[in-house]
Image (cartoon, rainbow, N blue to C red; front, side, top):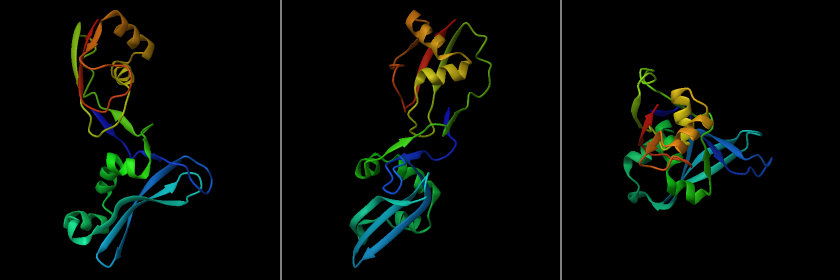
Length: 177
């Protein structure tokens, strides 16, 4: 299982120092103007500490916002921070991307699979973390990435999904030794 170890960094240029990475502060700012509501997730530049706002809600009527969401915004809920960072609508609206480098780990549940001739493996993701399957397989089996690429080329490593590129959803593969 691929498990997040921390929140990902936000890729966005800082207007103060031209750094490209922000970290989520876990704090929200909610502003009401009569019956309209705005909400932002606050992020901090990793280089200079400058605060930037990621729009979560924009000019929404108060009645159209779910009460539980409003409570979580007011409480600075850390789970909501993780949800909103991974929300494609929030990412598109704010023109951001997430940097998952060193923000996840692979939990193999033991190493009893190393000595079998044919191994069927199911990989599950606890969050939408884009990772190269070749990297996961290499890390899980203690192989080099070049060796995993060689196994794919020889047909000894097969999957219903394409193993090149990045995946963020569950997949299975079979390894023949």
